[in-house]
Image (cartoon, rainbow, N blue to C red; front, side, top):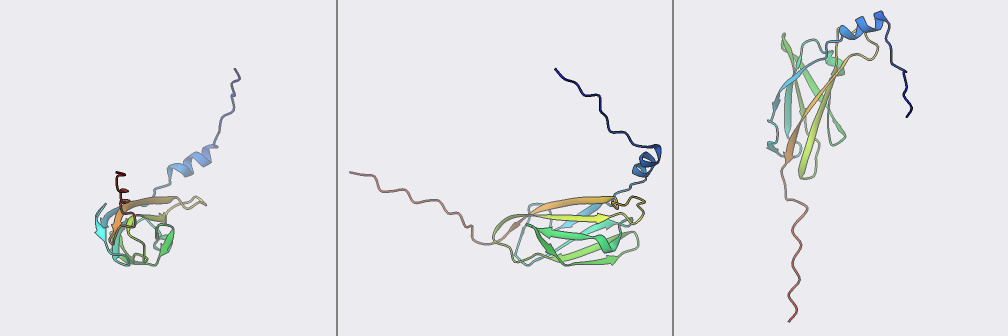
Length: 133
């Protein structure tokens, strides 16, 4: 057996900066988790006010969505339109960096929710072959 005593060590300054990282929080997703929505439909969510509004992003199935961010004093209201997606489930992935962060990485907050895109299901049950007589 071989054991390694290598450990990742941070300087006190780095530890202090990591403690100062207050990630943006996301809430009030609309439509709600696992709701059905038409392709191209509207989605909305709230982001905590410590987020940098210029860094808010949203995407569905890897396609970026154009977001509209409105300052509501205590939070940001974010709205967007879904891309024209094929029927099935799609995860809406949202991110934002903290405006107060002293870290170069920007102290990224991430979240998301799952929606069902309306439409005819692509996969239909296969027909059973007629029984041989």
